[in-house]
Length: 94
Image 1 (cartoon, rainbow, N blue to C red):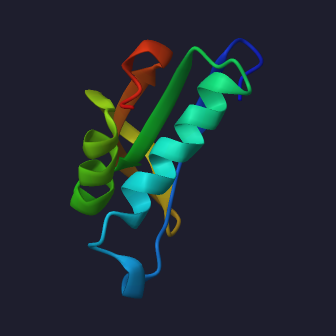
Image 2: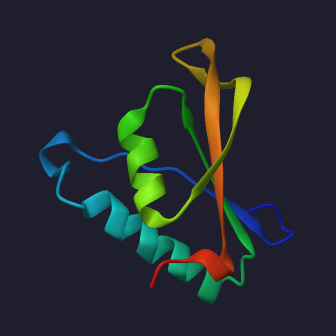
């Protein structure tokens, strides 16, 4: 959280639990808590370009892909490009 009404979300799921909607359900619950309980206005999601599974979860949860940021993340010691998306409180899927 940035102290100005925005937060970030990230997630990882054990391979045995993938493909069953678990991550999407968890993201929706956490975003609901962030918007409702914490009063956030915006939640941002970032993932390494090419991480299709993370992007799929974010989009199913209602995040809008906004941009590709150059070398914005570090993965295993190497700078990589990142997808970034966001969700506003009014956009939370219910």
